[in-house]
Amino acid sequence: MLRLEIAALYAGVNILILLVLAVLVVAGRRKHKITLGDGGNADFNRAVRAHANAAEYIPAGLVGIVLLALMEPASPLWLLHAAGISLTASRILHGIGLHTGVLNFGRMFGMILTWVSYLLIGGGLIAAGLSQQL
Image 1 (cartoon, one colour):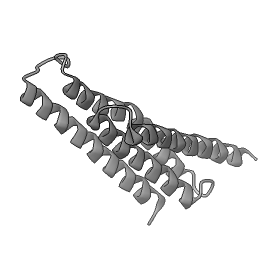
Image 2: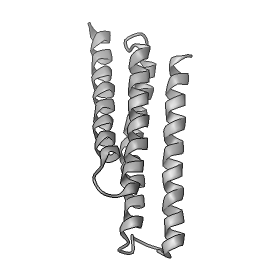
Image 3: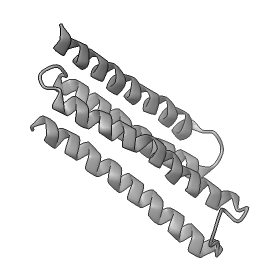
Image 4: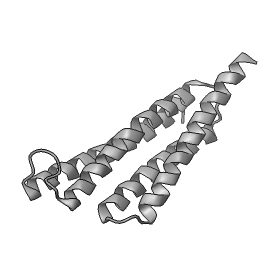
């Protein structure tokens, strides 16, 4: 599997995560008859926040993964997979955790794993960028 194919795999899965979360928001709007905002409905607000949170974190993570893929040979394949798996798993866990309500394992571990993915991506990009200069 080539580097850009790896990046494409994680990009595709994460875009589908965003799609699923968007569909859940639309379904919630129809179910609760809410046309704008969250209507003060706690269940619907969680669906909106799950989608918004994913929309906040996924794009930057995917940009970073694509940049890592382009930094051959400075970034190892294991780093691409570690970043992609941690970003994808974190967004799934966090989305499920938010839908279930209170602060729980999914939300907490999803948040921590998101930060781990950002640390891998950011650190990997810095290392790859510096390796080209040395």
